[in-house]
Length: 89
Image (tube, rainbow, N blue to C red; front, side, top):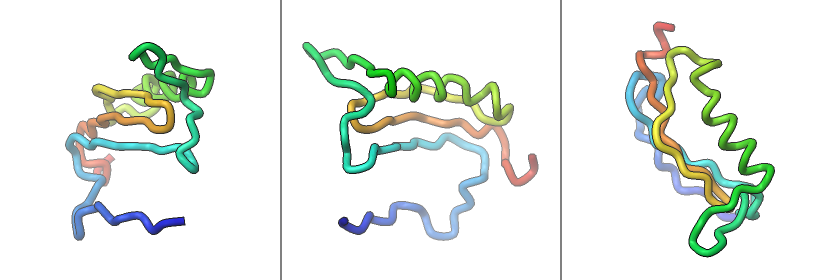
């Protein structure tokens, strides 16, 4: 297994409020979330679960909002908005 490149900012506190772009990949980049058919992403059962959990995040964490997101065959992109510094929550 290759070593991942470290992309976090040194000395940055990620519990601070702001917009955060996240990517979540499946293990071994297996296409669990669906497939692209005729240029359109068709979600599998697992892709539906990923989408539904993303949409429900604000119901469970009042200081967190969700923005744009995209479910791809083997990964997920999304923007989380921390409404305030979570250290003060």
